[in-house]
Length: 232
Image (cartoon, rainbow, N blue to C red):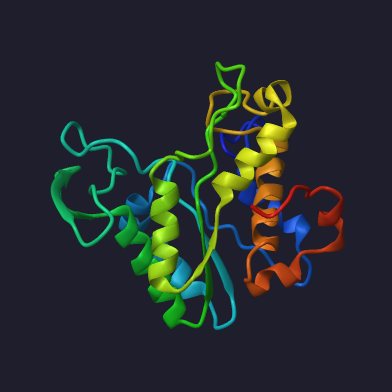
């Protein structure tokens, strides 16, 4: 989602590509590479977004790629506390005691604060890693990474819109096929090229089109020529 990726032109985030598919709005991409819901919160970045928004603004929140791991080994500052509710974990990170919340708690705290400012919040599940890596048969979509259903649950709890970006991206990659999909992962199975970032922007637009959120009314005509597939 973050702009420029590796800053060498080889990778990019979908948040840097999606603006061209909207009309009548300005996209302010506040995504930062390498962040989890926890580290984005700890660094005060959610507070920055909350301070920026005005009533009627749309805010899309998407995390997951950097939220995994374990707190029982060396804490990387990104891993969330296990669970989907009010569970907490006590850690020391960089010499400072920290109470770590669950992935769900971080999302819901931010979503509720943004709603209190009058923002219209969309919780979007993470994009997949390259599903064609090392396989010849496309994998099942019945068992997504845990942060996908976690995001859906948080959207339900906060009364916000859920976009299953993961599922719409998997659908797009299945239709693209192995060669075209592998080509948009130049460095690893996570970070996409600018073309891949555009694919992910298109899959988000498709998921948004299939939602009831008013932001879909801002999708422009040019999106129709590149966004395909059925509602899932």
